[in-house]
Image (tube, one colour):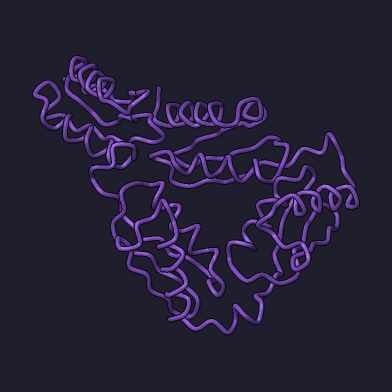
Length: 292
């Protein structure tokens, strides 16, 4: 099996595990690490989600997302708008009086005003979930309140949001802001805290973009980064594998092994070490043997 074949198998597996029956309509092509997705999905949100899943995998050099939204259950623009407004009205975090939409030939354009980046992103996500929507564009403008927020006021508001959170430790995060662009730096316990900090920052009026440079501590036993480092150290210490060069990435609890070893025993040993490690649920062993 070539590297492209193995990568294709890995992609098909992660799509199947996360998108169930929808994955059956997705075709995958891989050439020299470049991935092309084509086929049908039910919603724009699924199209975007498939690409995000593929991006997580190691050895993916680029993605050409050729997936199209199925038109089996065709909905005209009026039907799309009806479903979209229902979603907006059911979402308590969205003020439908301030953010509205129009639809033409399946393309949704969001208009109105929002006080934060989070509101705009939420509206786009909801629109993408509506069957029949082919594309979502935002022409939403920030409210006068958001425009008048200076950078120091934005920083203070973000830090207050962190302090009020049960998940984020405010003292672990250094927040700065230039022209409404917020940068988060520091070290937090895990990926949950990292993601929560970004979401909280996006809810603050005046925030136009969030650059999340937060790192996670090495003692985060639930994170993929921690498991990747731990597995690498375990392989380096094991005499059965050394001096083989085994590359390791852990994504969503699955360990992906690649590289080249000198014998089949080393390949088996690498997989054995990975399978015995707590937190790793599955191993994909793409290690090759260099016979002499």
